[in-house]
Length: 423
Image 1 (tube, helix red, strand yellow):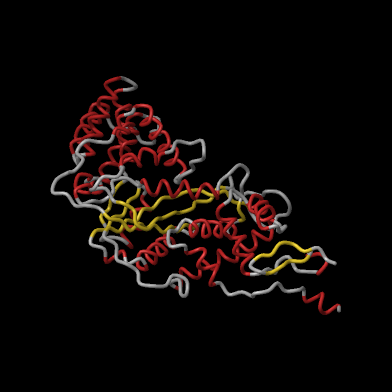
Image 2: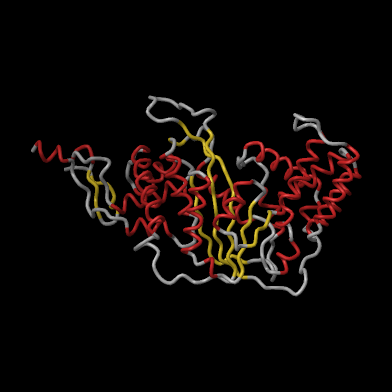
């Protein structure tokens, strides 16, 4: 008698080798288990271990990876088609519609090069993440929080925020790891629940390694499906990178554009160090500039910075990033370019966010699965698949499980054709 393995979705699996079962053929229920475990555990290896210990089946990491690739493609196709037969029912127009965008990085390898890890350049690819949050909040007749949160008055924390922002700017994307600064902690404090601050109702997440133009189209499609354009109050929150505001201008131009305040903080702190060095006067000046920015008085800050620029002089052509005059020029340019997105008192009064706290939290959740020591994804298919799956798993509308439930498939395990033909 053949040994019998535990049942999955009511189907018993005899020993595969004895029956000649193709390991690539499995029930929809088994595939669903594989994909969800792959989305929620730290690695393919961990997913395989959980499959063995909980479900009672030995499944190779290659099989899990292959199925993930199929489902990643299905998720992408479902999104392009508007999620037919997956996300049904009437979509409610939100009171407040919030779109937040941020870049990231995912480590990839070349395929078809034999055993081992074969890198493209240093192996890092830019990824893109966006969240869509329906929320509620109260509108105020005046600024409901005129003084900045305490987290922006902590010298050590502000210094770490600034260092993180500097690293991210050099890389052009986010690379936070488990040991890095939790930037979202400061942002979360800045958005701690009060009546005027948006309260999350439902969040959906999308992610991809597609270019900014293609990803902008994906963002537009998700916002349309969520009926965000019909919301009475709408906001688009991001840092100061140009690509963020290109997407805003192309797809979300009628959404209130908001520069994440935590990024403004890092530039103001940098400017204070450039002008005064590591002194008490530098910190006191930062606090004053930061408070002015929090109160939507960034023009006053720019005016003072220009006075210091006149004293220090313009940087010479080709000046390096360590030149204080060049660093001050960059800060002034940043504030000038984003001045129209720094009306924080107005945003608070309208019940809109002032930071990308929710985006920072989502990036952390994405990185839990896609980053790790010696973790590489095949470029581009493997990377795109895990981004699609992890993002879907983080959506409050349960779209990953719904797609897997409605995904075409067979109800039984098939034998290999070669086995039946041989018989």
